[in-house]
Image 1 (cartoon, helix red, strand yellow):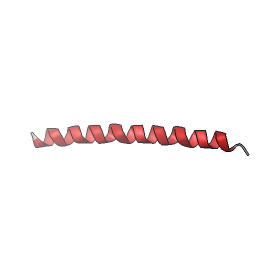
Image 2 (cartoon, rainbow, N blue to C red):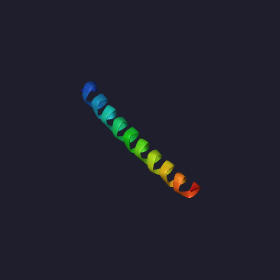
Image 3 (tube, rainbow, N blue to C red):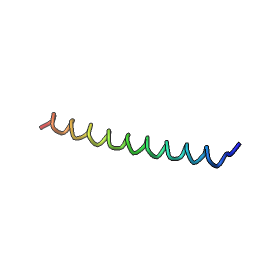
Image 4 (cartoon, one colour):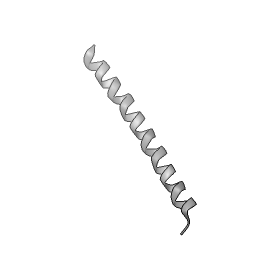
Length: 37
C-alpha cells in the first residue's frame, strides 16, 4: 500500500479532467457566440 502514489495519480487525473473540461467549456462558448452572431 502506497497511499501517496495513488493520491498523486488521482491528482493528475483530476487536473487533466478539469483542464479538458475547461477547454470544452471554452469551445462550447465559442460555438454559442458563433450561433448568436
